[in-house]
Image (cartoon, rainbow, N blue to C red):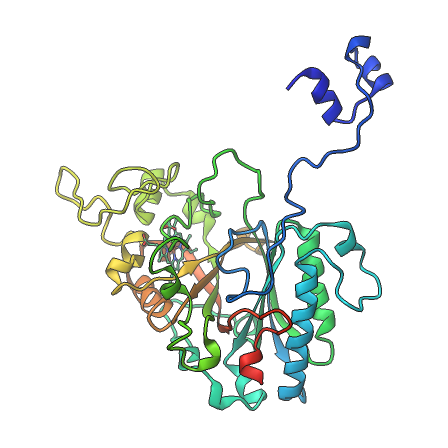
Length: 402
Ligand code: HEM
């Protein structure tokens, strides 16, 4: 970049340039401002086989919330709500105001910023809407895990909403619009905010880091893998119940990190807790971030390169009859607790075709033998059925509600 183009990009012109000591030959003409990136204009389609917000790369801002139906809403009210929410989200995700909105300066001012909104149904909504016959077996309550310290008021819920975008105002505006549109039918039960890295924040586009400093998400199933869909989505042909065709199940856990005790550990201990190097994300068995983990590899002294209780060993599909899930969690920070410790950690969000063969066996094992469990506390928990995507002109949950 020349000095001249730098000046132009910064919008510095004539007098300012002269005052800044630049010669006449370097004066630049005023130019229309140019967007630095295309982040704002990026749009993710709302309609499709699967709901958006599952396989897309993570955006930088998350709001997640559960709503409970207000008494008397029932199936007609729930149907009307899902229809209206779908219409509204279809517009907002394309950078348009919600149809019928009185005024909407956020939607008309900002681009969609990759906004996605993902909806789910909790087990409790089925009885309230007279839909018990359609309750999936996979929505059976998650078992109690040892060491869970769950706050029931911030767990479960009738409906789940996941809002993700690359701009905080766009994300809040979508969440607020959903809440306003739910008036009289459903109220917010709990709501939490998360974040991930901003687009363009780093020149090293490796997997993101969590608040413990680890590269997190490396061994996730990849959309290009042959068995990716089978791991994440309910197959259309064998869906039981049928309305879950192309849907998924999401497990949500608010997991607080005990960052004070974590920070007191040496790097060697921290890396042995996970089984990967912190800087590069490479497994302790060798290679780079993407080298497959070698659980058999031994150190020269005969000890396991990846310790017996390392998180990646205990969580690996190889240790859990192939159990797999797509983790799409966000960091959170809600200030400091009375004892001064950060109220911060991971909003764990994992999508899978069946939680009974995905999250449940893995968490059972982690709760018993994961070295990481000494540094985390599970504070909230929820499980939702995430139906398939809406067709053009249709709405999310249509196959359940009609
Ligand atoms: C892997 C961190 C909770 C399941 C990893 C990795 C890190 C990590 C750094 C290695 C990189 C990667 O492959 O993504 C954390 C932290 C947690 C947490 C900080 C809590 C605050 C959980 C929970 C589960 C889970 C609750 C599921 C019950 C997995 C799985 C892998 C993994 C399946 C991939 C293992 C493999 O195949 O190599 N986690 N994790 N994690 N984690 Fe966690």
